[in-house]
Image (cartoon, rainbow, N blue to C red):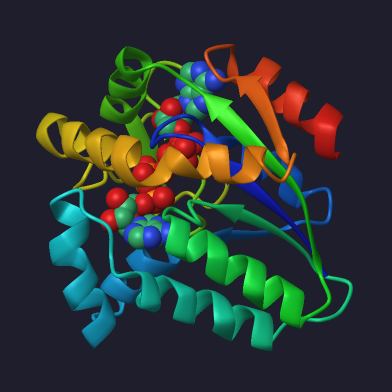
Length: 213
Ligand code: ADP
Ligand code: ADP
């Protein structure tokens, strides 16, 4: 089992990059998508998580770690996992190391998408996504062929409840406090590969593919 982590602030483009790596044999694991699926199904976990997510706060470590543990339990030896939005705290990073170790797997790379706050606000404010297949669009930077409709499956696109100015600010604060320390954590393991995420979507995808494709 091998794993790659996509690290970077909300809106840096992790999901957008992940879309092209799925075609390269990676299993895309977005804890945000998994949580939104729980919300859609109105499970107890989803109902609890939504309150926190709408405030731009993290759901508890044991909840997300539990989801990853379950996923690994159903995995196969040759799996290549691409983590998007996980880990987000030092506790999660340590748990991930433990889980990978217990499977004799390896964390190969941490791709860090670097993007300043003003670009992030612009990206998240115009983000639209497909609630079915999770494909991500932007009203200006990556619009669908027909406005408001997913190119892949024709589903009506949605704007996420947490992509509003107030919650975006809160998410950026939480990123700086709780997730940014992971850069140092992984630098100490010599795993970090930084990429300038202010480039165009094509350029960022090409830079990541060059590293991982
Ligand atoms: P973005 O990349 O735009 O921040 P995500 O879809 O990755 O969005 O996450 C949306 C929300 O889901 C986060 O703000 C947080 O509330 C919750 N979440 C997702 N992943 C995690 C995680 N690993 N730990 C804690 N909360 C998480
Ligand atoms: P993350 O998963 O890191 O939260 P997304 O992949 O969802 O980020 O991207 C956030 C928004 O920014 C989306 O609307 C996406 O279309 C757009 N986007 C992603 N990468 C770029 C880029 N390099 N340039 C301009 N817009 C981008």
